[in-house]
Image 1 (cartoon, rainbow, N blue to C red):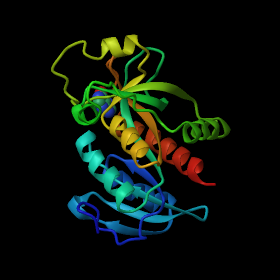
Image 2: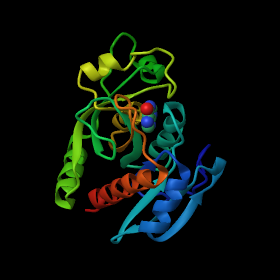
Image 3: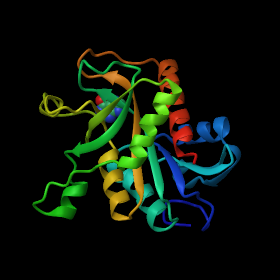
Length: 234
Ligand code: HPA
């Protein structure tokens, strides 16, 4: 067991899906995986391993925000040898070109967080999704007939942003959506020579003010989970 994950060595697959919400991890395991076994309930941040079409897959909750996500991702990479990590989460849309309900496949994640800055000194590091994995996810979405936008996102430290207009300049530079985890996921995967990607479903719109009901959120989440699972099978 690592500090925050209660799994024994070998209990976690090399491929791990990463929802923020641990109950979503439970739901994916119960809905899509065969022979799912719960390997961790430490802090109720549930993790499961099972198979999807015969492939071993784990699903681990990460909590909200980069500090929480970084703890789980670091331990998955360093202690359990994870090789392919796919975040599946929700985001707020930053541009009119992206509609509520739609999927975003992240290519890069800018951040206002110090969690990466402290590592690179004066250099402004560009957290980037793994190209081959991301391309494969996009190809899989095409095959599944799922519409998506692919591009830059923002990983913010604060859900309730104290500064009005803070995200406008990022949207002005092409950012499609805002969430709170991917910038550190992409950095840690790069550091540990693993692959990471991120699929988001738009749950709220920062321009139109629209917001999804929990039923509608579930539809977006189901599409993302299916896309992630179909994309990681070899
Ligand atoms: N900000 C940050 N994370 C989010 C948002 C948001 O507006 N919506 C869903 N996840």
